[in-house]
Length: 132
Image 1 (cartoon, rainbow, N blue to C red):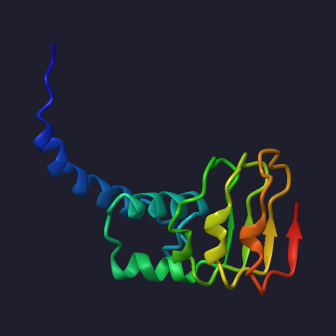
Image 2: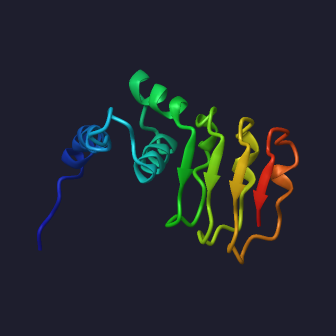
């Protein structure tokens, strides 16, 4: 039976995350793809400290389409300037984290059959288009 030295994995973890994040940029102007934004938020939720450049990239996000997620990152509020969010066909049942997206104007939650409570949207005063 092979044994894995866990301490080596823990030391490698930080390096691996940095390599993954460095690969998350597309060719056009180092802009993160929608899926990569999701991955960065998930890593940050698990303790990865974002660099200033990564944080600025998240602040620059205006529009995202996520169709293959099953839950929202709890720190989605880092996307402070997002105005368009497409979450159709995701299977989401809890959208409470969306209450932090104060700049959101367009939201598509269509075809999410498990979604029964949209009260988290009640304080989004800039939301002008909602598709359920």
